[in-house]
Amino acid sequence: MAKTRQHGSARWGWALTGSGHFFTECLSLIRLLPAVDLFVSRAAAEVVRMYKQEFELPGSARLFRDTTASAAPVGRFYHGDYHTLVLAPATSNTVAKCVYGISDNLATNVFAQAGKCRVPVIVFACDTAPELETRAPAGMVKVYPRRIDLENTERLKGFEAVTIVESLEALQEAVLQRRREIGENG
Image 1 (cartoon, rainbow, N blue to C red):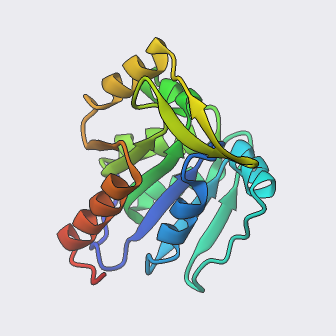
Image 2: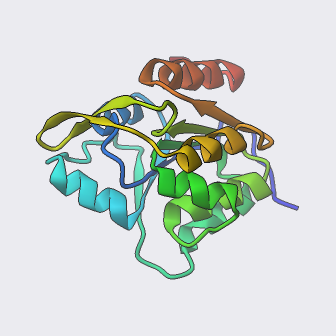
């Protein structure tokens, strides 16, 4: 059984995947959180370079990169270090792995461990409608998610303690709602 801390000493966990879908906006939202650990998958590290982004994080933030085969930082979930995990933006690949229990990178591993430790998760899935506009490094583009991508997003909605959001506004609201639930000013 995982040790539990009071919410006041626990932190936000935020996992970035290899999606550019509202990537810069997610970084801006991360910067507003008082105590956050950022889990950066290898694919997310590539996106950071493609979008020419910097990790300008608050002084209390900690950064974990996907550099170990066993995703060693996930052990922090068993010690009650986190009250919430945000997985945003989440690629269709990440969503599919989460749905089918595959935890082979840092982002999918923290998702699995959050579930095992009963830590609430907010997922901003990228593929939520048959037609979307998203930002690529060169500008906005239209994408047409496959049926399997949409089905996997729907399946993830049925997971216990997982909230799926389908827009940046819904992500902002879900984070704000969670801040209220844990008694955090924001």
